[in-house]
Every structure is written in C-alpha cells, then in structure tokens.
Image (cartoon, rainbow, N blue to C red; front, side, top):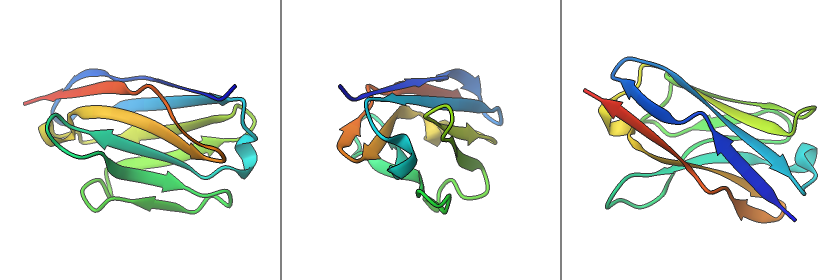
Length: 113
C-alpha cells in the first residue's frame, strides 16, 4: 500500500521559511522521481519542484532561488525548503511519486502579508 505523508505546513509571515517533508512507504523510493506540486484556491495544480533519481532538480520559475528540493533515500523522504515566502505561495502543497503515480494528501501553507 502506497503512502505519501506530507508535513511541515503552517502559517508564516511573508519573508519567512518553512520546510516541508514527504515520507514515502510502499514504494521503492530510490528509483522514484519525486515532485512537489501546489494548488491555490481557484487555480490549477502546478508543479513547484522535482528531483530525479540521480538528484537532478528542476523548479518553477516562480520559486527559483527561493525553494530547494532534496531527498534522503535512507529515510524515504523528500523535502522542500521554502525561503523568502510570499503571500502568493499560499496553497496546499502535494507530494507526488511516479512509480506508481501517487499523490499525498497535501499540507496547507499560508503566507500572511
């Protein structure tokens, strides 16, 4: 049974930082590309950052230079360090794996101005 459990969301002031975690089970984590998506109210879900099996990372233009995705294969966990947060970063953040395709339940991030 696949499980992706996100944590670390919350309320933060603009300019602050949060670190999201996604703990995976039921998958072979080391062969999975992992990604973080987000969905704001009334908007489509969008890709925030991805990390490949070889560690190569990619980011949405809106978060480049502010967010950092990383993975710990020993802990079956992917992280999203979010710095210099802006009110427009407010959304539910979801973790996703590819083998199989599966989504976590999401964690709310709210950035106040």
